Length: 575
Image (cartoon, rainbow, N blue to C red):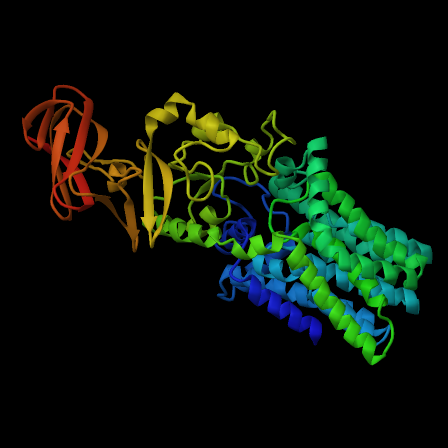
């Protein structure tokens, strides 16, 4: 099958892309499997996903032992395959060429294959919408109530896939009303049950009427509309071939059915413009609008002549080529791989601190929480109820989904680790919440910048020096100083198999401070290479012992005589 072959080629071509927001969804799937319910982190209930059906299906496959990223891709590839088959199946009623055209043009729509790999819900939504349209259009031809009901079931599942999919159900039900109240109820009934059922679950679980993502992302402003119109203008040229074919099909199919198909596409595009488009590559928000256009494009090739079949294949190839040539968004998607780089270092940090379970505050709320498995605080608010509702002068005026923040609130949560900016962290604050947090004296006093490294990847992380989880461990006669507290931007903390070592080049020193009780304290270390200790802050008794007449601040420096990998550092009380 031509459409299936084109889709398979796309999937292979788009690998290994996975979207950071897909990893947010899979964080919920993982916690559900681990018995923590549909939650983002311990002790909090917030609906930071907007694709319930995908989250549940991925979890169901994950329960069999399948890796969750693979599970999400299986669901999305299956949705994409259903979309191709539904478009071809509808076309088959118009002739062989139309069947080839429907499947091939769907399979050549680059966002379908790209997001089948990327792990977000758009291919699943496309498959359910296409199946629903095929069922309803067929029922309309044959005047069969069963077909209307089947279409309603598919649209109900679409409503569980995205909270904005009821738009399709409402328009489809209005169109079905032309055939009478029975078709209208058959279409709208299942969707109403799905929407009300999810609403009841949301109210019972999260105490909210809408997902937290709506609070964090939606804003009514002309700036958002400008962004949305720009998004459509940028993606339009790549879909011009599809639009031209759909226009021919609309002329042939008749006013009533073209009203449904063009109405669905137009309403969705207007909605996309209103919300401000999207920040991800490969035009994921245009995919839903493409689905009804596939059906119209198939109609443009109605017939059985062999030359029509060849023309349909050629049109599909031109359609795919136009997207690749005229729209840079698809190439950007194939080049994006930072989520996997993040996974290397986040996974290493998660393994190193598995027992301590530090709270990590991040902006990249997909890859860090998912790969580390650690308790997490989303500083942009998609997965935090307080930040999502925190007023901001830039709400609706900045980068979609990246406008919010509350530095004082984040500090009040006492995160053990903080990453400014993107997944790899930054010395300088980036987003509004970063800047607010960095300006607070308590943050400047209590946090130290450390570069964690593993397998050639690294991230700059602000670590809380007074953390009860990953800070100094105290007993009456001993204080263990975690070696990462000796790390810095230039002194990497290398993580291997769950163990940490701070690497200090020859001739350099790593410094840290710790508050100690009254008494004499001796410092000791272990590591690979040669290094010595320098102490200050109290009365020096000998080279490695310092005495304090009352509680004081001990300042310690590890001086590397050769390249040194510090693996242990501790203080013991001297009688």
